[in-house]
Length: 466
Image (cartoon, rainbow, N blue to C red; front, side, top):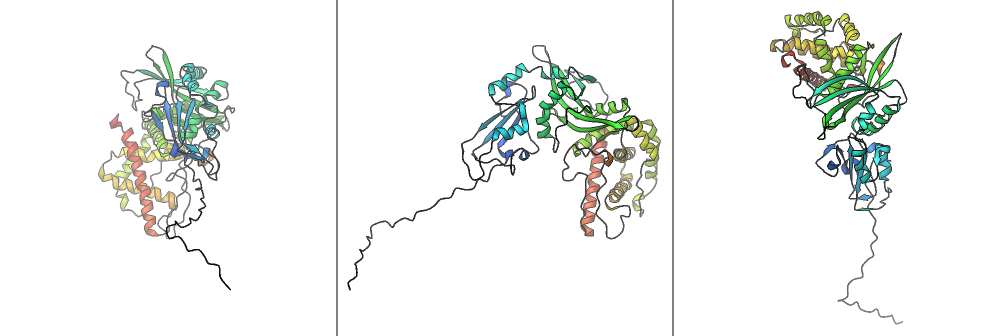
């Protein structure tokens, strides 16, 4: 049987190529903070200028669906211009292309409206017009409020009682009850800043008459000689009933706009609130779990009041004298130097400082009384160490098998009120490693941090610096 002869292959011909099947890459998405820039602008000339004031938002992921990423865009850039005149916003969105890589294409407008709501202006020309059409927005908004305090300013607020020379503007703190149309409208314009800059904060209920808005306003003449009103910061405070016929004040939100921060305006707002609490004789003035930066400001204000508060001076002097007399650091159980109950109650009644905040201030008052003399510091640090250990490990801090417990909050648990979401390192609960070595290291770190806080505050409020 013959076989069919196969043709011999042509050595010069190219081998037949195998067909390849391509798979598009799955869209990994982009983090909002990587492609979104937000600028605060005070004039239309600043819009489009990239060296304008750029803010650092706390977290943008929560405003986008699913896992918080943006999908379907290549080369995406979102530049948002936020007016600090009218508090409207405009988003300039650019990208190279779009494609569905398996996760769909994010609706950017809807996501941005989760932040800016009705303040987001679609058309750029309309946004630019707001700088002129709503130039008097703040003046009209606060016109129905109550001016609580007035002060001349040269761009900064002095931390002492000295006179400010060459003042070129005026500061006013205006109190506004939230359940009226003007206040509710103003706060709704500020909500995007609350969401972007106050970590873990939610908008307040503008229909609840228990809320009060304290607004810090700067009044300054422009080049034409007209007085312009600029909002520098604000705080939201809730006033509620305290049996039998009193009231309590709780600070929920406080924000100084980023361009005006680190100029003393935050301290000024806290001081005004403290003065209101004292003048109106509320039961106390509380804050729930603030960030370290706010706690620093609040304690500085409280210490200034306590230094001039005569009823506690004898108690402070007695504690300081006792510390100066002995080698407490050599004792097995160093005393904690807890303030007398009468001093605690006097501070609450007259200065509206709650018990746990007063305990924090007490340690600083003792430190100031020692005049930072080196020979007393060893004993002082032993007292702070003993207090920290007792708070973390319980009273019997020298026994084996130490247990892990929640660190007592700096603020009264009965006055719990959401202000900020806690960050790592803030007072809530402390996990102490079970091994003796790590336990000691972590406890010493807490002591060192507390000593550092005390020294920073003492440096600011020391009478020698006034």
